[in-house]
Image (cartoon, rainbow, N blue to C red; front, side):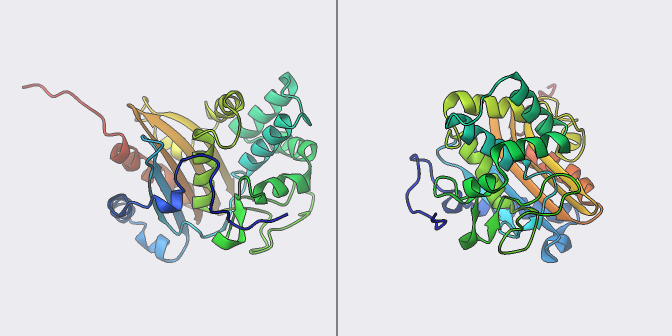
Amino acid sequence: MSIAVSAATLTSTPLLRDSHDPVLQQQLENIIKDQGLSRAVRQRQLSFALVDITDEQHPRMAAVNGDEMIYAASLPKIAILLGAFVEIERGKLQLDTSTRESLTKMVRVSSNLEATRMLNRVGKNRVNEILQSDRFRLYDPLVNGGLWVGKEYGKAPAFKRDPLHNLSHGATALQTARFYYLLETGQLANPEHTRDMKEILSNPGIEHKFVKGLLSRPQARVYRKSGSWRQWHADSAIIESGGHKFIAVALAHDKKGGQWMSRLITPIHDLIAPSRIATAN
């Protein structure tokens, strides 16, 4: 099976790497600087990808350490979600009530039990085969890797660590952002299953990181998967607010990483989706 990057895309939507926006890049770096996190970026302790997809056909992308692969804890459970829907599409799994509930618990409350159950139903090696396939290329050596699931979410040892970085559960910010962009533009699944996947990613059950930072922005609707283990923290989401839509992905290797994400997401939200507050004359 080839894992090389193909020049062709499944639809007419652009590649995110061709959609880098210098203005958005400077704005992202300014927000990071204002939060006192420029040093964390320089030391590669923080990665962030931001994609304005208000106009899906003309995304605007910015990133810092976007291709830095980091241990991402539970964030790569989105790869198991994708694997399940690929197998549902192929008729190998059924999206019955039990499967839907299992996937929802895996994503919304990050159930390790359900993640392990679904990983084994899809097939451990099958998940990474899907990630590396020409159809998705969500793990690609030519861009330093991406999403990877090489271990059950439990005490069992890793069954296959990623070939570039020896990680059991890994991600890069840009490849994770691609996952959400492909989802939003209908390139991960058919329209019905795209709606199913977004519904599973909605209504986060854990109120921290991006979700905590957006509590003061109640108009924001979040489709999200996060992850935490010891000093590794991750969050990723599609955020819809006030007619705007954007993807945010953060990966951190620091005990305060979750706090960084809560602090960053509010000004990033206001950059992409500025609130319109009427003022009295």
